[in-house]
Figure 1: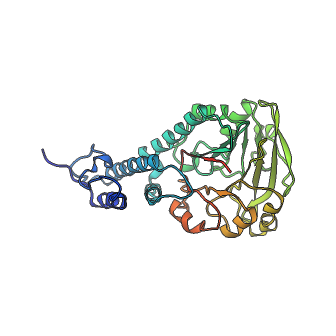
Figure 2: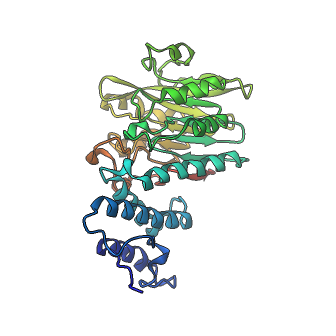
Length: 360
């Protein structure tokens, strides 16, 4: 039987992956069955699109294996860093949102989060799940809170987006939804409507969906630095403490920077697309007024070092990497986090579908 050939570029990737670990594992470079999908022709002559589909699927197969073996942690091993860089390579393909392998990766990683949420009880600390773009769900012993959850239509591919059934299930296990600003990679009216239908509060800046019926059902808290406000969680018969910082993306876009303080007094801050220089007037003082356990900043935010020193977080988890609706130059690679967020605070780099249990 004729042996199937492996494209040289992919073989190089595999070699980079396995070589650093050879001292600790019995992995042979000749045994590529662990990494490379076998269903391929001897060549892809005249079929560049088909080759790119197969390559994307193969690389995602590799990364799934590595991420499974090396889950998120502060002292990240090089194997995991390589997996993140491989994801960048797949997601920075202009056709990525149209590729079935990427669509399936998005769906399966979300379903994995959903299954974990449905079966996870938290007795101490904060469990954090990262979804697409800046979508995040946090859970403590008493509450589960969602930030910037969308179906993924911002990718410009309907086949990439999540179904209503998936969103219904996610909302069922959450108590509230915070939306930072009106851009559709952060704000999804269908998702907001699902939360409202289930009697869960949706909190947004005052300018989102103003002309739509949904507007009157949305909660609009004051945008006031450092001041604690309360949101009633009717399904839990308790209040959630919140600070809504008056943030902005650029000079004109209202962007709520939300600090949620759970009943257990854990505090998580989600910044949305905060990026206005003038807002450092209050960012510089956040840590003086409130403890911040976990900071969830947009990875490309203005001046990460100054931002970190303002919030003084115990843990940083950047977000907004690889938004597939953005042009290649602004999809924000995971790899850039390692230089951008080289700050004197603990940080963890995560991709879609991963979780981390923060225990101070």
